[in-house]
Image (cartoon, rainbow, N blue to C red; front, top):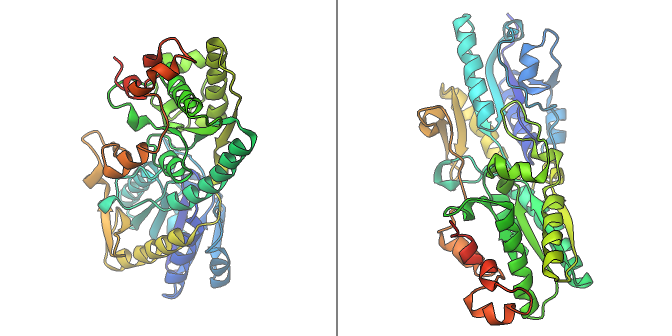
Length: 406
């Protein structure tokens, strides 16, 4: 029988800290005389007769721990009826499958190990939750790894953009990643003191439409003009797109493609460009002379080097994988609370009756959100008289009224 081994794979998109997790897991198990194998192309490799395998030694693991990106090629492949390559697990005497990814990756890992068990192959599987969207409902509202590093990179770019706006006396319409929740957009906009942020959670009392989003941006522009401030940045979360009804998406004449999980591939289009063009069109109709340019914060956030927060968190999570494995845990996510204590989180604890995991959203009623929203610039009832210089019906651009329209 060959030496016992651990198999690591990554699913979904990149996030800062993946290499830190891989490195830590590899070092921890190499110490216990395990072989540590990395599988390229995520779950696709498990169904490949000739999978691409990377065997780790200490020196490779030690080189990658602080790097961005992933040393293992990633894939969004989601198996359907493909034939599993059971020899991959038998020939390499795999005892643990470590998956790194979102909830879809965790669910797939559970199904695969369940299938292997029916085939008489018993292995443990432990999942490390990852997403820069920060929308997995982890205990104690702890962040998912990669989020703070992506936010930090977004703030770096965002501050430069704001400085350009101030220097050039114009506006930028920016969009950033966040499929279902606005954590990333909220964090960047609040940190950069942007006069307007628009996240899907704001629309808890009204439906999301392009017209409402455009009027919210222009509301901020008008308010700044009233106060003789002729520049700014409006940041819109891509989740605004994701939460729009199909009837609205059809208005922008874009034929979306969809990934293996049924999600619109928003990365194929520039949301900032679409929103900026709509804003410019409306400004022209209103006769308001304001220049604005689009800025898309997208893939450049995903593979940046992890900051200290994520280096620590990912190291703890990697060590937590070894801890849970030694305790005989399987079919769970590894989580660390604010004190660094490791606990297993089973999918059954966070899935609904249909097996779906509701995304963790920005709590717009929290004191944090309410304080940050106070820093925004937008038209209110007290501005109506001054706003008439720019629009005939200032109430149409009243930020709070827009968010309660029926």
